[in-house]
Image (cartoon, rainbow, N blue to C red):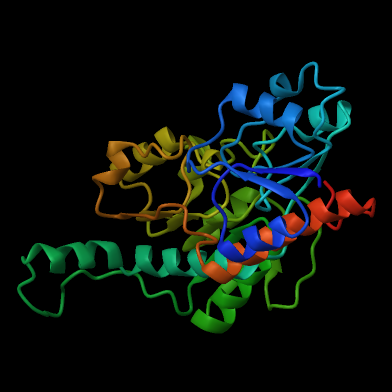
Length: 317
């Protein structure tokens, strides 16, 4: 049987399905692979299932033209942690798991929008502290999102799922910016520039892919275009936002708040963000539901099995 290496523990259902077709080695640590571990995996196994944080850079692929591994079946839709071109240059294919993460990630975006605008995290901490003195008419007034404008940056699968929730669930007007023209089923208006979204939206939601092209897409200049009552929501990749610039914008009151599920130097989160009451922080929960993680694992495994059977990859990058 072919040798399969899984870099983090996966749900039991996925492991059982994998063991039916492969000799499976599962690394039981939950931390990212180190460079030496990655290079060793390419030499020892036919297929590797890596995930977020396993930084398969061009350097990792150096001298790997004759390596045993011919496929990195990434567990996740985002693949900016893998240099796909460098992998391809040494004959290693890379696949991902699109679609499986869409609805769950959009749910997290909606939750962060509501939590940030309605000060839910701050309120929860107040109750837990035992310092809540009871309801009164001016306590913890936030921003009601109904009738407000949701601005979405990136209108792929996840962006469209967020648009549906914002419009039909919250009654928001939706505007969006996308690199190319994109027609969607939800009532929404595409605008020509990023600045137009930033200057018009009460919630700005980032749903772009990671990578060099979107690193620090939101920095000092862009935050300066946002409205003072606006909230920034990031469920994309952490380095899409310049965290230092975000901290400065929050400290100066330039924007009203932020909701973050991802971080520039994850898992490190700056103290300046952790101490602010108007920032909602989640530990990268975008796809954290058992059925979603099972579907992601089965999609990654389907790519691995296609390689084993000599068939086209369902999700080749």
